[in-house]
Length: 325
Image (cartoon, rainbow, N blue to C red; front, top):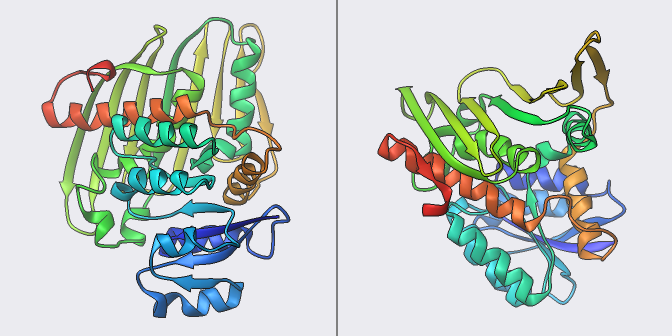
């Protein structure tokens, strides 16, 4: 059992606690850090962990073997460096950072310290996405030519908080909440992005935003791609990979459609899992040396490179090369 501290007990931090506490046999929280201890006191008592108000207190706790970060986005890179310097494995909620250089700096700190790092891209653990990665890697689609992804939801209005509405914390409209998951999928399936051209169209601001983000991709290996995200519509997920012998489409958490030349479409369905528990248990396995975290450090940096390129393309109104970041 890995004893971990969770830093940040807002909406998403509470979700992470609920996903594993008294449920997982591989990881549990023994320490929580929050700026609002009075608000979190009942949660901590119910789940049996102590509270403090600063990260150093958790790092100094001899019972804490690893750290999970569920803090505002702009804090991630520096906090990862701080945790790595303390010699503890670290799991960080997405996005890993807001700039490619900061993501690379955080990864380098973990590598120097010899500690594993995990990132909270829970959609990668969906059964549909695991099957899509397996199908693409099998080569059955032939030469892969193109990838498309769309992820939309209504979370920005349902779970509003002031820091999440700060454009410095959430650049690119809904990109940090939705599009970042697609970028992680693209990194796994298509490799690093070379050039991105993006746009954001906003028709309503405020705490209940109405906007869309769309982007065109040219990947380093020659693939092309399209991304779309809407910040005010019922949840929808699609990642579709096109090859010259067939194409495969992940729909939602548990469905995949395989279309092969000369054959009828094949629909595959899988049992739903708790993807938050799955990603934290995968991190526990990495922290205890059982297996590597399934999202590689290179993919983590590539995802943030594509993210930053989209943000910059929205700002400048033209294409941005990731190598120029």
